[in-house]
Amino acid sequence: MRSFPLLKQVFAVLIVLLCFISVSVLSAQDLEKKDIEKRIIQILQANLGARSEEAGNAKRRLVGQVRIVDGDTKISCDSAIHYITEGRLEAYGTIQIVEKNRRIFSDFMTYDLSSDLSTFSGRVLMVEDSTVILTTEMEYLSDSEEAIFKADFQLFDKESTLYANRGKYYRAQDSAIVSGNVQSENNDGMLTTDSLVISKKNGRSYAIGSVFFKDSDQLNLMQSDTLFADSVGYRLAKGNVFTIKIDSANADTMAVWANQIEIIPTKLDNEKNDLLAIGQVKQWSKSIAAVSDTLLYSEELDSLSWISNPIIWQEDSELSARAIHLKMINGKAKTLYAMSAAQHISFDSLSNRFNQLAAERIEVQFDSTTSNITIMQAVGNAEVIYQSTDGSGKADGLVKMAAKQIQIHFDNDGNAEDVTSLVDITGNYFEEEASLKDLKLEGFAWRIDSKPERPFIQPRESLKHLWIDSEYRLFTYPYEWKLPEDLSYIWFPENYK
Image 1 (spheres, rainbow, N blue to C red):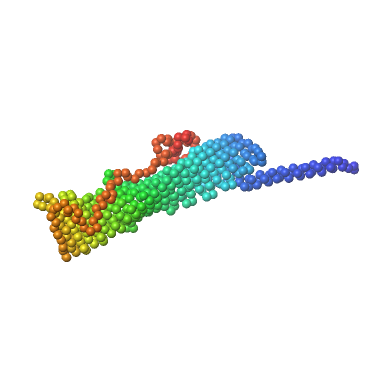
Image 2 (image 1 turned 90 degrees about the horizontal axis):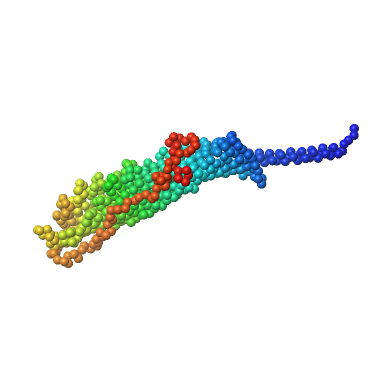
């Protein structure tokens, strides 16, 4: 048989070419297979689809009723672009994402398949377990279940609501770090601040900057630079603290200013609290005003204690000591103890001079009905100066007396009517003359100008979040998102009609 060397050569070349083509095809398939193995995206539905490649970057366009499955995540949208080589997905219009206990709705989304980072914008709504989040710009990391808000957002569930300009939400810890016009509301009350760290899992929160808190009954108001709080009612406010406890809508019972205030729930009665104020303390109430370095008010013990050189005022009288303790009954004064270097001064309107009492300690008894003083007792190196009147009630000199113990009894109107001195008594009577105004006990100091006055300006919250103002309308989504009935209507700014 004759051979055909030329045909053999041609056949050999064809074999080589076919092998080359097969290798090239296999290489392309391997590359695509490698990309697919990296992240498998199943396209379940689209009215129109097209694939293209530019500079080695492959992408797939999908239009019309797009349905995509990525692992356990189901995505539906109006249109999408899958950047195959880059491992990125962009979705547009009527976006719905369903995965496990989470549903996300948005107008626009970019999805990095390698990092699980999704970026949402437009009208963004996330329903996760019992938490609902509403915003216009959000990043979400599926692996760590973290949401990052770069624009105004609101987060709410059955127990609380949170508004802010930006922040982060961590689902695993059920916590958030937010800032910018923050407003939080729950069963305890309403809080506004510049920044807030909140952990619902641990029942704790920490507010920083321009803090205002109002309890749910609107009977306790507080403002400060920072505020720490927990779920059992403990509060720690620091920096320019001002708080008011209100008895009713029109009656203030006590206002306190301090560098720091702690509110501590009592152990025996969770509905009652102790208030500890520290640093440049000022206190005002209808019956008593005071300044001190430390103030302790106990609802459970019904008592007030001023520590470290306090001064207290009641009407035209002033009392000072190293420490003062007031025991009350149903909020009305009963017994007061002024301990160490005690001094009581009251202004006498008839003589325009001062009644003065000084001793190692002073004890005062009050009528618990009228809060008027009934007995004042000075013990230990006691000294007294009191003004005398004649039969017609005019100023008639004064008496200066010293003894181990001095007792002063008061009438029903709270006026001194009897002074009794006991043990080692010395004293003088001075007839009426102009120079008596200069007669003072050692250490005399009248500091009425330091008396705190009733606050005319009460604490108030910073501007409320815009989304709860009436200028923003109620928005209904124009397409079916299968929302729960109570979420069918939600708030959105006018810019996102």
